[in-house]
Image: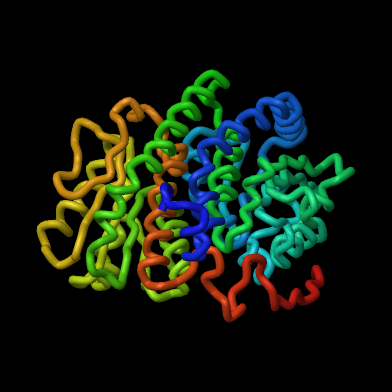
Length: 390
């Protein structure tokens, strides 16, 4: 797909999505530049919070893919943060809006970190308004891809709301979120990770090379997708479980549900969901760089290979001392020191490419996969009901 002419891609209805997947490594370079420009302001903002409050609840929130940003980064950041100071949680706006009394507490100082591509989803706006209504000491960081969006407008002039805009081209024009997901994920990691700036810059250089290699090795992915299949499963541990959910959503979105999907953790998959596998299923496993976790990730892939039920079982991993002996999309061993959360960016590019190819294979158009209009790029048809505090 990445080498086809624009005319051919236009015929396939895949011009926009293909370009937006391909440009992501360059967007990551822009993202870290944006972070460095706002670094002092960000550090001052967080320092003020830590000095003012003994403990702050940090809620990463968004809807759909934007929610999965929080699911992807939270396990890693919880392991890095001082949890006596920062209580990090990932809660979708869709859960906050429908059940605000379960997640928002007036007496708990809260930092609401909103992720949004357009910033115009009804739930995104409602979650912010509910937080303002309920939480006494509310602070916000708004991470969005559109400066014209309502979330960005709400942040303007609000000293308690720090706006961090993503690269302009991360505001995906295709139906599915691609660059918006990876740029917002990277931004959250850069803001909250305790690594030094030099370490962060080295990691971004590495994952950019990895992302470029996905584009250059599209033939390997195409070979996997030549199999006969009608269902795809993604497995991942820790933050990779959030990544697995995002990867399976891309399949559902771009094929309009013609390929059915599932996701789970490697350990959880045996407890019933494994029944989803048949001889027309492809299983992809995101393999951790953490040696202890990696053993569990590889155990399930080896088990599934031995079962000989699935059409294909494939690892997406960095080459290490122990590897999956079957089909694998392997990245350079030099990336073995990259934390899993950052690996999510090049790993999801593999998943995005799989979704792109699957969409074309079933005769769908990736740029407009839901022509009926029942599913929209920005959610419609949501009624926000009035909430009254007791």
